[in-house]
Amino acid sequence: MLHLPGGRTPEPEDVVVGSLDLAARVDEALDVQAVAFGLTAEEVGVRRHIVLRHLKSPGARALGATTPSGRLVGFVYGMPNNRTHWWSTVVQPYLRAAGYEDWLDDSFVITELHVHPEYQGRGIGRQLITTITDGADEPRSILSAIDTESPARALYRSLGYRDLARPVLFPSAPSPYAVMGAPLPLRRH
Image (tube, rainbow, N blue to C red; front, side, top):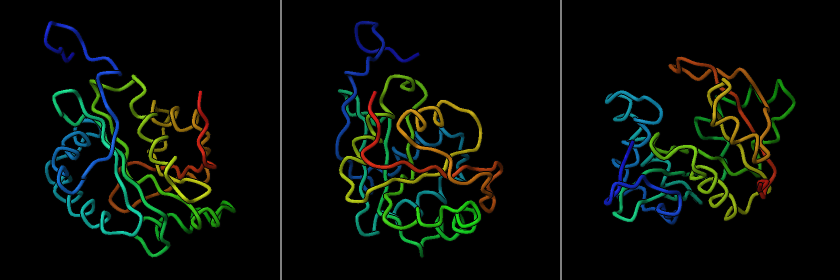
């Protein structure tokens, strides 16, 4: 458990969600993702190039969750979906088979959302995803998540996401995924 000065543990109000220069802080963000998602150093190296490439896409934007000391403990980034992007080309046949191919149009994709495990369960992920989608011009949002019952999937469902296609197999991914979609704005509790 992480402790702040004075021996207290961090509270959600100690974390501020705001704009993030993800290109400048990509290594910090990938450190969070590596811990939260269990990535190897090799996988982090590959993802670094992917993140930097994604940030060049029109409409791509990122938010971070930082502590008072400036430590990045969570991040989200996304962009308007583009059918020519790798992710879309992989999920498109699955969505077509399920009758949801039209979700690839006019959607904001949540590309990555990760919160350091020491900060999970405090509403930070919810704040990150709702804040980034509140700024979207698109009428809906899509994402992919490992196809297992998890706190992440429970969060997405609570926000209004529902399964559109599953199981979805990504090349080299060890586990199947689900593609989920929700109308915007996301539900609040």
